[in-house]
Image (cartoon, rainbow over all chains, first blue to last red; front, side, top):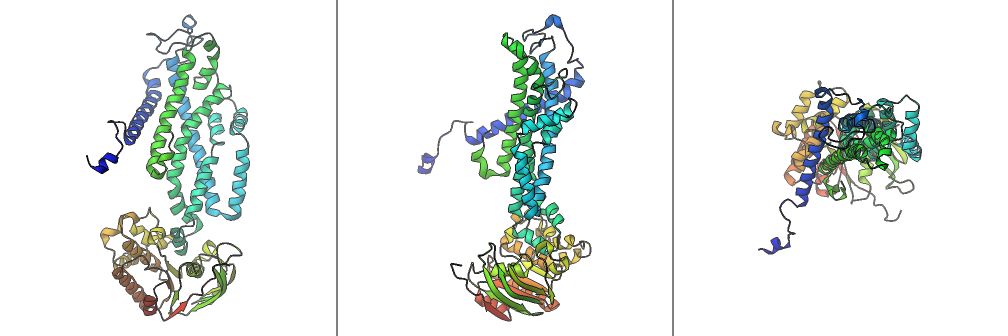
Length: 292
Length: 220
């Protein structure tokens, strides 16, 4: 064995950091694909009524008839969990797009215009940050009838701040670069510099922020529904399912809360895992900061 | 062509890098600005290129006073000046292929179609073959990238070319090639040149007159 080889740390096959990272990406991709396939294929392929009540089978334990058991009024927990996940993913994706779009626009405007505009916009952002976003989200949903879109608005309109800060910081750093000077010298307008040079440069960061926002938005939707402020109680949502089954948890029936809970936790971890891999790819220097 | 009068400029108020400096570049004249690193010659070049607002002083371009800098400078004034920067890696948008990099000023001024042939001719003139034009900055060398940056600076036929240490990162043959391109351009268009650099020999050979940049005291 050579001296340099002796200095290398030994790893069992499949246990290197690279191997761990690859495994994480594969597992995350499989889980996200499974969740996406389930919410897209189950409703059209299995036209079952997720609201069908069967009081004779209420709180049945997981078994052959009902893989995940039934809830307090005999509804199938697996079927409702899939429908609930569909709502959660819809809310998560659309709210993340809304939040990232607002954040990108605000961050680019503040960073590209700079000066007084930047100071005013960032003080407004500070003011916005000072109000707890869950409280603001509750205020927004309370103004409308319960449904998916008020929840999307509640999450999307309150979660753009972090994206705006990231984008602004990136734009501020970019606008001092000589290639921006060269564009200005070549006659480019402020709008052209923003559209051709600044926005394309920050899109990967904004995209990453959007992906990282998806799991957060899913949790928010579940929290609002758990509080009775999100999706109407009769419609399946992971939050409303857990809220409705709280009582049965005390009496020992764990399945109506555990399975919807897992449907929240597993897809969010999987999406965060993919986002982490993406972050690693676009900014390798930050590999050591990865947690998920 | 360019008159700088009593320019005081810098990046932090109260700590100017350039103090009360005046400089004139006549039509068709080549002026070299020589000085050590950190003396403020690049800052002065940015003021001359209308890319940095001075704290005090007046800039005149073709006899007209300059009232705004960067985006606030009228496009007609900005595009009379071509600028080549020291570090081509930083002066090129990493997402643009060299072809788009060279054509960028034409597109920014709405003359993309009109100047397409000139952009192609300039690419050949600076020594960039067609096989290089589809590449992005990270796929070419510093010298090739600086050639593209020079072509970009010449595209709109500026009447003043500012070269801020254009050849500082290049080998001797690339330096000679780029200087020759600039000389040909000046001869054909009667353009003025403000060349900033450390290399006294090069600047003396290249310019009609060379000015030593006033040294700034270490403690302001």
